[in-house]
Amino acid sequence: RKEVEQDPGPFNVPEGATVAFNCTYSNSASQSFFWYRQDCRKEPKLLMSVYSSGNEDGRFTAQLNRASQYISLLIRDSKLSDSATYLCVVNTNSGNTPLVFGKGTRLSVIA
Amino acid sequence: GAVVSQHPSRVICKSGTSVKIECRSLDFQATTMFWYRQFPKKSLMLMATSNEGSKATYEQGVEKDKFLINHASLTLSTLTVTSAHPEDSSFYICSARDQSLQETQYFGPGTRLLVL
Figure 1 (cartoon, each protein chain N blue to C red):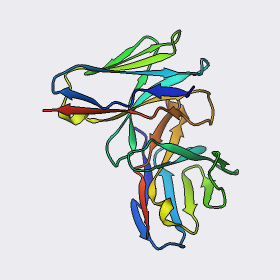
Figure 2: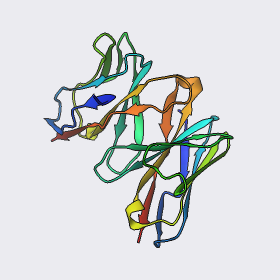
Figure 3: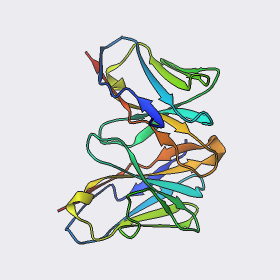
């Protein structure tokens, strides 16, 4: 089983739609969780951290379910500029171990 | 937010030459930096973990003599692709962790390498 699994998509949605991405992780000892966004031919950029209590940043809501080892990202009122690949990222240990990246979910928002 | 720079952003070289890529953390110290490679339409692949003052840790399948990593200071790590070949053409991205910010990892803008 892969450490971090995501549906690769693509998700093609119209502007204004609400879209949700899911991610599962295999290591129950994982400590911190993130969503990154990567645009075509660019580096990944941190979108938001994910907390157990759930957190919201504008149109974006992230949730974590530790019992199910499941992370979600909800995007409301999709914009054309939201088109990108969304990477689910897990930190399995503290210290100097690298973050573990999912392969990403591609989103295309269509006018 | 924390900033990581990378230089050069793009390089074209002849087969057999060596290419050095620099990665700098601009406003924080990074005892650990990470080097990734990404082929077109593929996912990010971790190549190695660069540790300041000690040897890098390479992922399975990555040749340490081919990809030389030096992390001589808390703000600079370098990756040298030695004797580059066309199959080394890729997008190389470094990343550094700001451990004062809950271990958030920030990426450099990447270096696009084309080996002719």
